[in-house]
Length: 388
Image: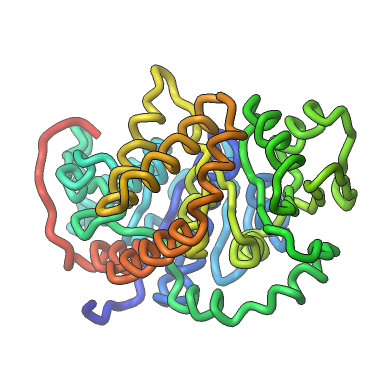
């Protein structure tokens, strides 16, 4: 990748639901600032969501944190703000009109900013065709590039910090468990459970209670803990422990991004949700089950199957069928206990498959690196005249 100069960047993020949008934008902002030495300003409309995943952030309109300038995106948006050289519109969040007008003024002055729409992650085939396409804004004439994260060389790749895998491989798992006040049960399979509320939780917990292999489940405080309490008739809170049969549950705090990585690296199997934790589970190189964010008309299941098609390419039929069934049962709120038991029989192959998948992904340029290249004008672009 060519050496690039330091440029100013503005990243705009609206928190729609949960922590996926801000999780991705915050990771990206920190990586651009700290690894690529870019001058980054993050505009976010919900500071409380950012504070939840990065407690050093304060609930104030303007601040510096982790090398990034953070601005509260509130209404009315400031007039006459300095426009950055590179602008990222997180997940089609629509840049505020006053800022867009300043962008247009920059274009008229002969210094048009680089405008990038960072799209949601998908493994669908059409993403390769749409990645890098551009459109011209009908009112301002500004050109916007559509940047699609993905899993193949024809996409924008995934967020991956430079030292991520070396940090993963040097983790002291026992120290981390001590820090979150968990004592792993001897001989148990350590499983993290981070998901949306899910009726299939009942069948999964039943299978774990009756499992021939002891299951020690770590549950970060969140929506899935509500489902667990409903199923078990408990009122588990952070810091509490519960045990029945061969299942032990520890309710642990909602973790920062850095600590959540440690959790993924420590556990044997990870249940993850949304986009950010889904990506991090793949860098953990451990078996994982994805609870994809539900969409209308089952559109999310098409996205999930597209990923499974890539992940399972070249794998044996028995392994592929069992993983496919487990993921579908979990996401379609069906009986997940039996498919879990069948998949656990494939654990050694599952471990190899996820490790190999991680190594394949590492061969591709990471998302931040590709964005820096695009911001510097190195990346090829495709052209369309559709409205943004």
